[in-house]
Image (cartoon, rainbow, N blue to C red; front, side, top):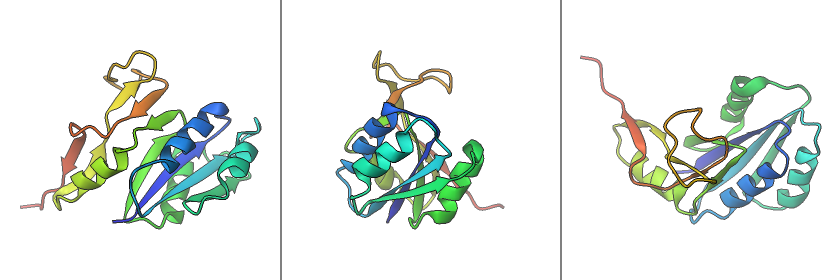
Length: 153
């Protein structure tokens, strides 16, 4: 099951480099990292293209305008070639086994959505909500949340 990992960037600075490096070091096969740049002006777009552009897993799309979060992610969904789409924030750092754990969860045909555990890079504690961590590590924990699809009755 091929995965597209969509990373949205707008002036993410050096955090983007760490994020992309962690994604390109995953212990999984058959995935692509798709960077959607939302008209960055801080040099992060050029730095990412120069550092990671030679990887066969890496694809880069530069938008001339800031599409916003939803617009950028929707562009990633349209451009992605994977069977599953994973959104990874540009300030996240994935554990090497993260994608393997996501795929293992998706192997259950009743699973439609998976949310990964986010652990603060500073405190090593789990996030309890969107305001819990600004920079974190995406883990391959087996306690990932899985939403199961059910057929209407």
